[in-house]
Image 1 (cartoon, rainbow, N blue to C red):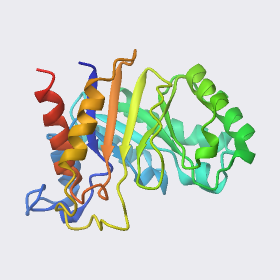
Image 2: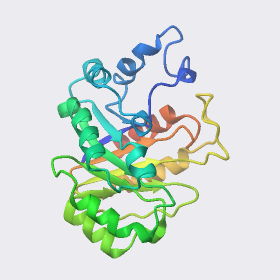
Image 3: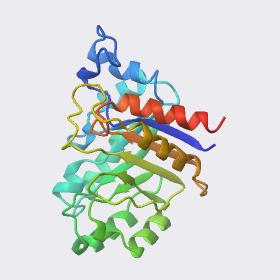
Image 4: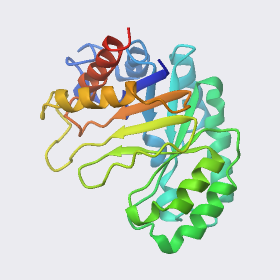
Length: 251
């Protein structure tokens, strides 16, 4: 079986106390505790602000040797500047998160819906100029961008097209890199995600995804997958369920 790393989008949720974190656990210990249960996490707060070096190093120190951080690109680059004139911003971001060393996993480039086909040339230029010594995954929210020319470019640059499980967006199961990146986003209109408990039962859906992962026979080295708190309301349970289902069918 390929290397499969499953986790959640974020870890610093106080409402996970009692249902996941011990009731008396200080929030400063959340990551350390989380990393004893899962081997990866998707970091979302880098989307809003690039953490300082002290914070990055603290993440590294709190986690086991083989723990993997998938890091989200700052919205300043992807949403505000729409990839244009972002050379310095990108260099600063990469220089900062590089401190994670061997614990640094894929870097998530999430494009907004209003990043349209008119900006296609900007996208291609940006992807072509990214440093090649990192893993990148790109999440597209405008389906008109997903054309053959983009898929070919992603393959040439070994950039993974995110398999996005989202109620308002079709699932594109294209393999464009030597790894796979999956995001189970969920429905914000139906799930609050703030109780730490299951709001919508997703067991059947998760088992379907487990089979999809098990049967993925392309030449890929690893699979990364992250559950949003909006998927069922209980991403910890979701992650545990899919890990259990995958292991059960591969032993």
